[in-house]
Length: 225
Ligand code: 6GU
Image 1 (tube, protein in one colour):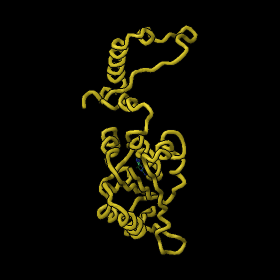
Image 2 (cartoon, rainbow, N blue to C red):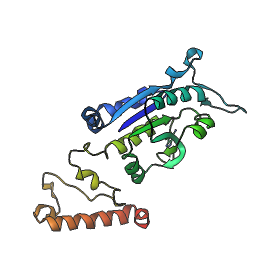
Image 3 (cartoon, protein in one colour):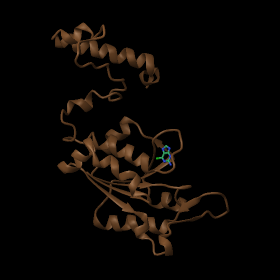
Image 4 (tube, protein in one colour):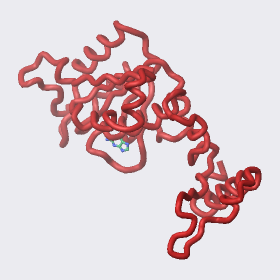
C-alpha cells in the first residue's frame, strides 16, 4: 500500500511513523508513506497557500491551486483508489471503514487546516471525507495519523502475530476481554483460575463470555448494531 499525505504542517504528522509498529511496517516495505508540503506547490510570495474567505468571516481557507497542483502531480505518477479529506464533518472513522481502506493500493490523504479547504477541492478531487470523532481539532493532521495507524496495522504482514488483529476490541463489534501477565498473584489480587488451567477450550469460552459481558456493561450500543 502507498499513502500520500498532503499537509501544510508535515512536522505534526511525521513522528507517529518513526516508531514501533508503523515504523516496522515501513521498514518491511509493506507500506510506503510520503509527505507532501502544500507550500511546495504554490507560486505565490511567502509560499502562501491560504487566503481570506469570500463573503467575509474569521479564519483562513486553503486555496484550490496548490492542492490541485499537488494532487495532479501525484495522479500523473499512478492511479489512486481514494482521495480522502480529513474534516470534522466527514463520516466518522470506525473499524469497518479501516478494514475497507486497508485493502486499497494507493490513497491520498488531504489534511485541512484553519477553516478548511475551498469547497471546490471537495467537489472536484475528494472521493471520501473522514472525521475521527465529534470534537474539533486544529487541523486534519492528527486525524490523518489516527487513520493511517488504524489502517496500516491491518495490512497483512504488519503485526507479528496476525491473529492479534482478529481479537482486537471492535473487530466483531465486541470489546476485548481482560488480559493478565505475571505475577499470578499480586498483593493478594489473583489472576482468574481458568487462565492458569491449561484448558484451552475453557479459556476460549471464558474470553468470549467476558468480551460479551464487558460490551454489555460498557458499550451496549455496539450490541444493537
Ligand atoms: Cl479529521 N479534522 C479536524 N480538523 N477536526 C476533527 C477531525 C478532523 N476529526 C474530528 N475532529
